[in-house]
Length: 267
Ligand code: SAM
Image (cartoon, rainbow, N blue to C red; front, side, top):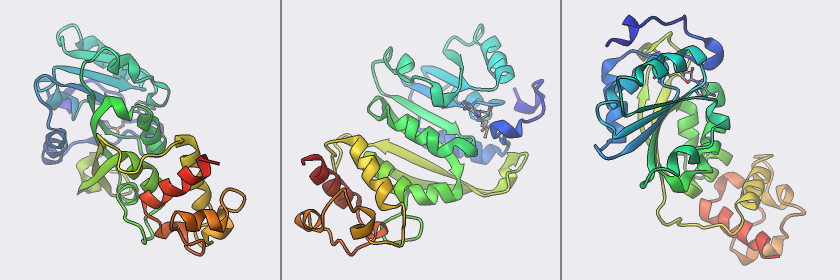
């Protein structure tokens, strides 16, 4: 059924409701998840079903988490005729993914055209379940995807890049113009694929401490580590793991951040 033939209320701006309407883009996003017949998928924010309708025939089971009660009710009403559909009327930021993953044998795939106002919190929330996730294909504001996938040394490289790249292999797949949505957002969007590392290349001893150190290091981008990490690590400790105290956070690799955090953790 065409999504616009369904009886829906006007899009709610407060819930970031920009619905996809370009069939080529919709096909490309679903293809990027590469759903196999025995796989379980979680879709965040199905909305009117642009992605959902395509995935329903592909997935072994499709879980939807939708915050808009009317839309969640609509999808709930469809569960009677679609036996692979499960609906959770919930805020993804408060949703315990293990409700889904605990009952599945294999890691689940996640897809979502995410509400842009909560995109970073959603990514951080999902990171808590990364070991139960096969991969994620998400649509975000283009500049957020640029930051997620940025390399050291550039303007886009920051806390989000380091935190996500420590846990995931990140791919910037393609850009999506405003005209692909109804109503069109003011900004360009992009699709990212995040695949948790089977073996983490730069493991950290204490994830919380790693997070704090990265945040602290980027708190004042123009200052050197000597200043931003004062009280956390001495210059000697930095030198011991091969990091120059006169460097700025934006020049450090994920491996160097991990080494700094691990040396702080062993004290
Ligand atoms: N997937 C649809 C599409 O591509 O057309 C809708 C995408 S729209 C950008 C975002 C969707 O997320 C909306 O359906 C909205 O109601 C839902 N949403 C907003 N905040 C949410 C939250 N905190 N938890 C779960 N869903 C949320």
